[in-house]
Length: 104
Image (cartoon, rainbow, N blue to C red; front, side, top):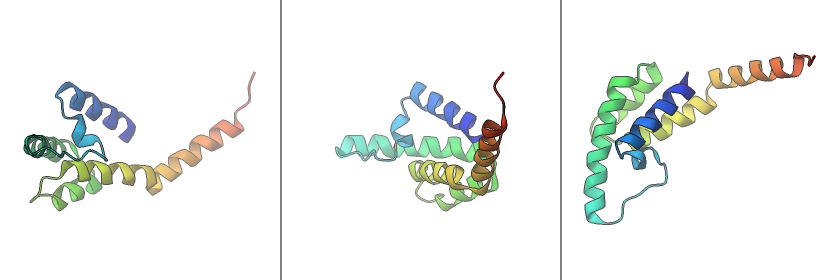
């Protein structure tokens, strides 16, 4: 489920020229870029506030109510999705299916 959501968010961010917010390593240097990035952060924060419905997603959004740091929300949510117990169980069940299936 998070994979589909992440693809949709990336597609929307690219379409609206907001991809920097979803790039962990992006740090604007020029003052004009910094100001623009802050505005992009605010917009993506609003998107996350509206679209993240899981308990973890809501908690991460709440952590950044003051600074609107959508970049960190996305980074932390991505890390959680990859390292969570559910991700571990999903990968385990996929591996079990792959190793137990027979080719015809």
